[in-house]
Image (tube, rainbow, N blue to C red; front, side):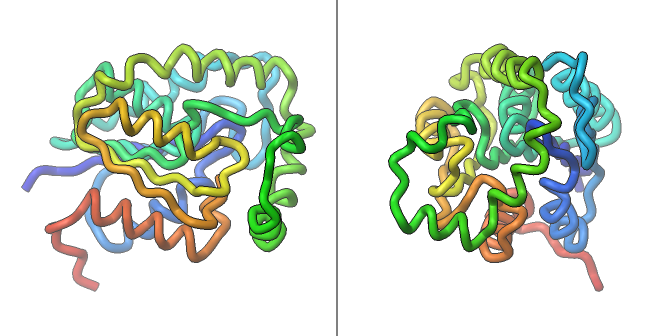
Length: 233
């Protein structure tokens, strides 16, 4: 059987914790090799001063090449900014399957969230999930230059989505305030071999929502390993 490798790519100002629940869910059930890089300055403690967006992308690209040396098939799971990097890798190198979770092909400026026309149910969902508490402590550690680097690298690495020809699934929450789900709808329309799954009441930080996280994990599992035999426990 072909040896499968999965490259996990986290988001901007994030770290392994963003995709670790999905990694653990899959690793418990299936055998696969993997790379799970953390971009420079990212992780539980942010240190983004003096870093450029290319530093982050190059870490993802290096992990891709490390993994290709060890496996026959390569899948990439990219979240948020990591989804943009994953898509760009698939445009330029061989990828067998691509999983894009809330890929940041567009973004909402946090300072302008109050301008969004949010329904009361969306506000209630975010209060219930306590999302503001998850995000606000990290904001003070994001210098303006690093935010500009995020915008520049996303623009530089979006590329031509029509060049992504491998099988793709998009997973996006419909109450995502940081990356509007319409960005995935538009990207899905440009990728010829893609499927789109929109999660009702799903926020951007799916990893902190038990029910929506499980929904996303099952979608990823079915896409990556449908027909594969689970580990014998």
